[in-house]
Length: 171
Image (cartoon, rainbow, N blue to C red; front, side, top):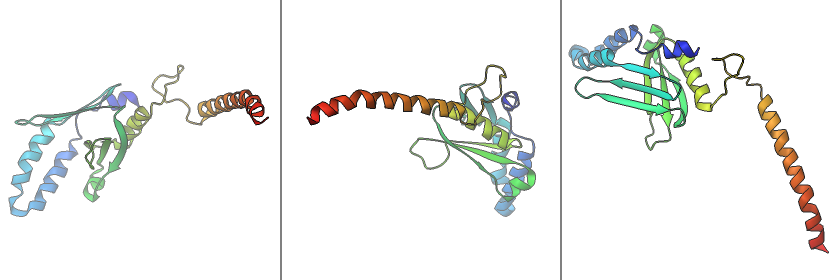
């Protein structure tokens, strides 16, 4: 899955068709929103790597957004009726910034669920197993259960060390 996500660097060609349909909502002035959407489509680039996500677009006013997995707070999938009809989706990535909206919206993806799942596992810090690189570790809670047992043993040892002190204090 990791290699498939890293291979995505541009939006799907069907995104331009979505932009044309979207611009027809402006009626007879459809060409006004179509021009910036055309340039956005042709300059939109994504880069996914081990540290985070980068997205850039624009000709006159170049914009680039880079997020590390440590900054990501939440990931959402959205798609309206037309996007679902075309098989597209948007991955909205939110950080702990002051804005209420998404910090980054990766649009024009056909593999949006795979991209969301990959970034979600990277965001949560899922460890890779040594025997099978590229596959997430078992998420059945075995590591969590072992950690909780260790914490319980340590708390029991602390309680046993404190009880004699509390008994002496009461006398």
